[in-house]
Figure 1 (cartoon, rainbow, N blue to C red):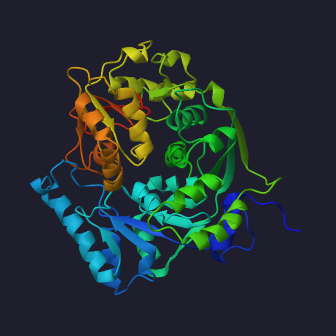
Figure 2 (figure 1 turned 90 degrees about the horizontal axis):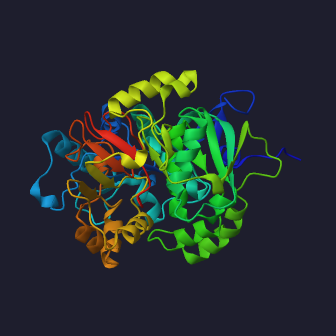
Figure 3 (figure 1 turned 90 degrees about the vertical axis):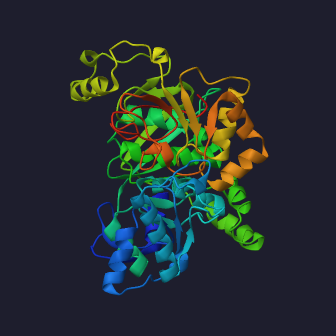
Length: 456
């Protein structure tokens, strides 16, 4: 009888083409089959150029989808030409590559355009048990479906397109169990921010993290995506959850889902996609969901976060290994120790990104915002995660709530998450943001970011 396995190891073993090592286990070097990838205009150009130079073609073009999301403008009028020359060329080159290599592309004007990690699940292209690799670190998002998803570099994208495989090193495993239930008003974003705060920005480095427990099981699929998406911010290379009936029901409503007959047959098999009883993890961590408060970041790393009722820490009261980073972060953020977080005034507010711009996120924010107004002097903007999300929100009247409150209702794209487009902070501007990273300059040179749930 074989030894009990983790969910991660089960999926890796099913996709192993061959092993370069004599023994399995963490660190094993192997050739891994990849089921699907998603390409964007920013990280794919060099890979396609490499294919052209080597006179190679994609091994399985139908396993790839290309979307425009990183460099495009999210201006409401997409015909206004809010693109610089470099961005325009990147978008055009993605379309050229799709045409020349037989890969489906959602260009800027396609009604299905959107952020890659929103588009793939909403189409029904992310199925339990898959391995999905893509040129973006937040490919961990797909773990919410019981998928091994991870980000890769440009040279790996070229190799993947040419062979449908990658040379891969098996990760160590970590299980994070969140027992109990989240308090009213506390969200999946708060949960993952608290996990990152507690274990640190490198707490899961070199690991595939499986999230489990009653709190995770109680969440909807889109909330689970938020957790897996941000797990990379504590160093996880893979984040995943055992699929359940919520996942199957979510997939069933998607336009490219398998047929009802196939889904019925798959449902029973997908129920077995979970870690075996007695499976050994290299690390095991337990959280009580009831102790997790609404969170906000104060510094320049996602682990520099606290309860919204807290205050900027005093570096002298922090562990020695965190003091230098805290001092630098406070200087960049222009904050003083002991400043209550609720007293920090903002210049901008942004709801968007692959972390928190799905329909459920917009509904949460709209419930809080209805009947209220954006504070004087604050510029607020929202970029739905996909064109489909935008249309669905408009169908429910959510756009009117945002517009009447004073938000700019923009188009879909990565937008202010990484300021690789015309959406950016000015030096010194302070932004309350639903995004995933608060690094120095992430939202614009000199911009200051406070991460939080879109509902706040």
